[in-house]
Length: 334
Image (cartoon, rainbow, N blue to C red):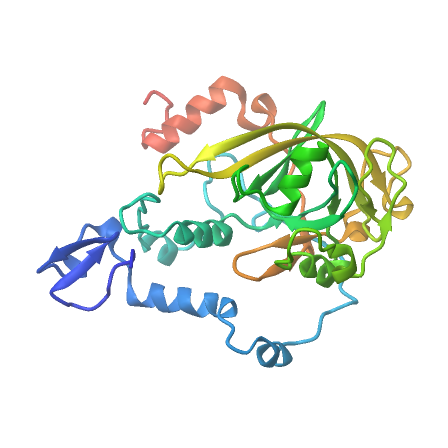
């Protein structure tokens, strides 16, 4: 186990390495984990442990279907350049230690990295991808949270696949074959259906039937269907595929990065502004992925203007004052 024990046993595992006759308080400060911190983490992660999910779900409050997008102030509206963390970061937080983990430490399962990363890189947008092979004999629909926008001209998107080209999953197989797809953004009103499309069905079984969603075959540049229920969809062409070699099993490929170019945008009319350059988040109501089997909805929003170096910082003179303040001499000479 890659975490420190918190008892004063004679043998302690430090990031996977056994150190005899060593107790936690004698370890370097940055490697110590308090019992309180471990208990707090276990309490927060309780939602990811489900022996009887339906029983647990029944104890939870109903979905608030009346909830609307709420715009609030920032945590500290009076924050100024150089102030550092806001008031939500307190003295107790400052005293807590960080643990340095080596993702390729001998004995550390690669699954640990997967679980840690999907619980730490959150919230993640969901790319709901519709594909079919070039001969159109089957249709596939699957959600991916290793997904994001990376460029605007041309519009480029990325999807990560935890599968090599030699053993592709259905979406990757179809993408490489047909070189096209439709990426749909998942909204609250079909989250259960989108989740159902993540089923481990064999190739040739269509998730459209399992999800119950409606395929719309009206795309301009691709033959794959878009999700009719989606507020926002993008027709895409395959731009490139890059494979990655495993660190845990050198000589084997472990995953792929796919780059897609968007060629057409589909936006539901009530979500699109008059200039056709913005989508209303209160109509889109996007869902995001967290760790484990958890999803999140967007409810609270705040706005913070982007700073300008001359006006906000005060140019080079203001920057030098900030340097002096940080170094404790107040005159910017340090």
